[in-house]
Image 1: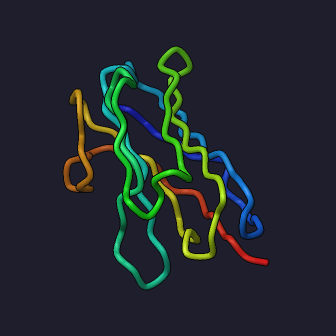
Image 2: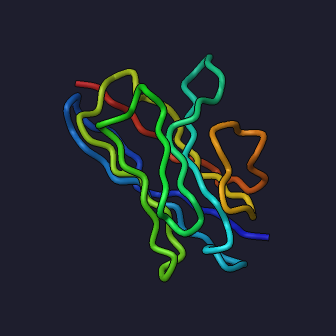
Length: 124
C-alpha cells in the first residue's frame, strides 16, 4: 500500500498560481502511475492530469491544458501540480491518486490509492 498526503492548497486571486504537492509513503512511489483529480461542490469528481510512473508521459484535461503542469520527483516520493493563471472555475478539492501500473489514465476507477484532498479556492 502507498499512502498519499496532499498539501499546498489555499486561497488565491484569479490569475494567480499555486503548487500542490502529494507526498507518498509506504511503498516505492516509482512503481505507481499517478494523477490529480478535483471535485467542486455539487459536482462529480473530475480528472485534471495524469503522469506515467517514470514521469516521461503526461496527459491533461482540456480545461487545464496550457495552465497546469503535472510532474513528479521519484527520489523524493512526491507528485506535484503547478497551477498557473487560475480561474474561479478551478475552485475545488484537489486529490492525488495512484495505481501500481505504468499508466493509470483519466478515469478515477483506475486508481486505488487516494489522498484526503486539499482545498483550492480562486476568488477575488
